[in-house]
Image 1: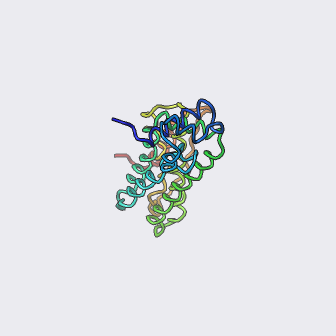
Image 2: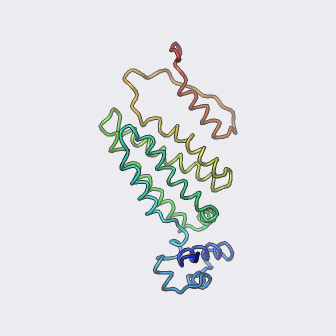
Image 3: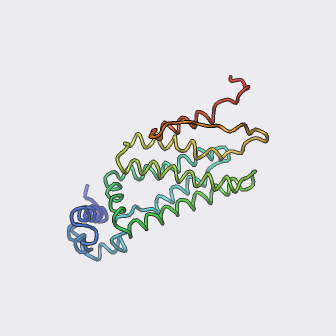
Length: 229
């Protein structure tokens, strides 16, 4: 199947950026390697940075669509699936996503655009979670904690994958574990249900997944004096 001109332009841009550097690569270079002209380039992209960045508008739309149909009972599932939409978009990009990550570390324009895009995801999660929780006890604060926690959990796992510290399967597993912590405040605690503080002790250098498991186990353990089924 013939590849689209957009796909060829993206592939050409990344090849040239890796080979000769971002600043040294011109739009004419990209169009020439892709076998297109400048007019075709500008039909798809406004500039060099846009070739590199993922189509965040499409991903944000998919996230919003999932959150918009969440029932009160299905909010946690909706947040998990919406966060998974973002992660799996990057996983599907594979080497392209990792090449972009390397470029962002050296090209301020790309780094700034990625940071701005991250804020768009945060605002989207904040808007929906506030709609869900604001009328509940401590709802506004919980909404901020949940929305920020979801984004932090995703970004932590994504960075590990981008650095090739984990594979696709590991990223999916670690995101699920990280969201266990991020979503602690999604559900209001019953009145009077607060228990004594829980302390988890771990050693320096412990793997994140090990720490997450220890914390989750501690938080879900029965309180002293309570019976387990």
